[in-house]
Image (cartoon, rainbow, N blue to C red; front, side):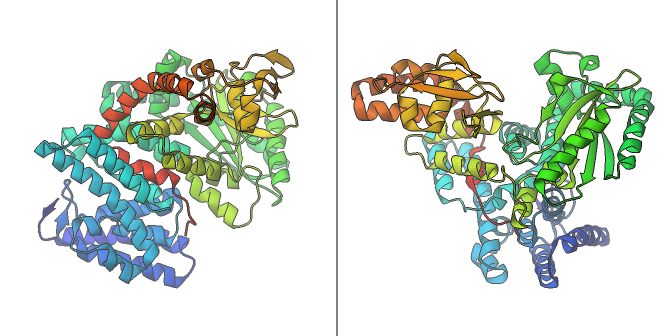
Length: 555
């Protein structure tokens, strides 16, 4: 940061950016008094950052204004979060303290600013100790643990931090190369999976594309050019594909909109890399999104309308059964609900069609904030608690006494990246497990005693062994025997932390001699992951993790 007296152009720019934020904030604030607090926060931050500039040369206050705009427009948070975003650098970069913020804006805003300041302080401290040669791995781990234990219990801290990270990515061209590499590494390793897990699709996608622009510039340019060429040659074909759908839905009386989108450059690049396909083999390049206003507040009827629309459009076009994705019957853990199908157009192009209600679309675009807003407004869904369950699980991991700080980071990162499957008990009760989970993982998820006495399983009525890997939609019955007990070899194939912990607990209570061998197995399997976590901590990522467990009302 540098300090030079502002010019008329600077003040005009600040005024323009503030007016844009004010318009968005007014639409979000519920009362005039709430907006007055936002106005007060802007005035305060504007004065605190007066004559200070970013590396780009623009007034520093533009950064908190842009972060606040992301908070309100892309995430959909309320006035206290907007205020905290405007103030998030004041304590760190000026003479004002958290107590000053508390006196002026209340304890909740002060706690949000304090949480954000602690994250930044850890990075700054780490940079200083590295430069002086005093940094040690144990000191890093202790700092990490301290933040985990003291971080404010409010999910808005991490949401505002994601907004801050997105704007820093948008202005990354002005960073020195070493700082840019560090930010991109942190972003890909943790912030992107965190945005995905919290359902913030637009933020996730933008950060992915920025990462690709700087880390794989040639691939980005090539994919961008090929995509544009494809759009130029087939754009009219997509319009022709949409026209019959619009006519059919209008005839049935739906109130709807249809949006077109092209797969993002990063998504194309990632698919080409992981699936080992060429650009021309990316069949879901195009997507058409149907967003409708349901004719009833009843969630059952809302979902039925999704299936009715699916029936209508598949009467017009042939669909690929193996590419049908029903996220309505079994929503994702981040609250995402939609029905995806891939249709063949009359011109021979495969087009992915996503069917969502307005509520589903809000949650898909704004994630956890929209999810909790609908929940607060009384919308009842059988999957409403999935996000709460995940946050509780993260909190449980953080509080675990048997994990060191390095292992802690790795466990949580794995959880952020994990994809989930939904399976069922014999009575049809739903359970969510990580992809790759086994029948024994399922047994321990049902009850500790069922896991301890398990000897086999029936998966979809077929007899299977305990290491059998489960798949989406499986129905599992665990076969037990009273004289059965956990075996050391179970640790070789269980994947959930819950099952591993329960097995270790059994040996701890019943066979201490076996316990040491069991812990060696766990340590050996996790060794390479722990080393990866150690490298990442050395880059300064750890500060964000504590906020994963944060919960609270989103005003």
